[in-house]
Length: 108
Image (tube, rainbow, N blue to C red):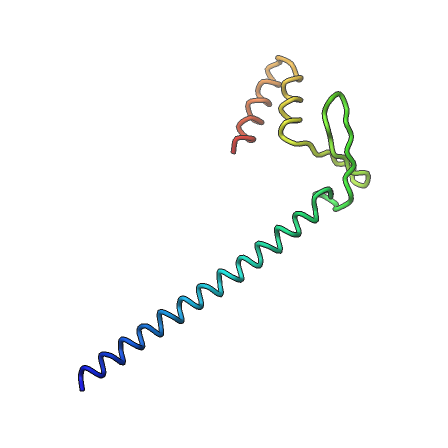
């Protein structure tokens, strides 16, 4: 009699573990679905202004490619262009401090 109760307890514990595993798998599936949606939305937003959502236009000036927004007049550059701007800024104390800050920002 005691032996059958123990088997029932073992079966109940196995069922609970299975339920927990199914719940965790479902939560993971939902998180992955949300992540896919965000990734697709970010991909669709490429070429759009982060401020107002308008289409960005690419301009090349003095060898630097800059994305500009015609609506809010925002300018967007990548890390390489930023490094080039800092390098061209000269040797003033302010330019060195800005370059130091930007390099630490780009590494993080």
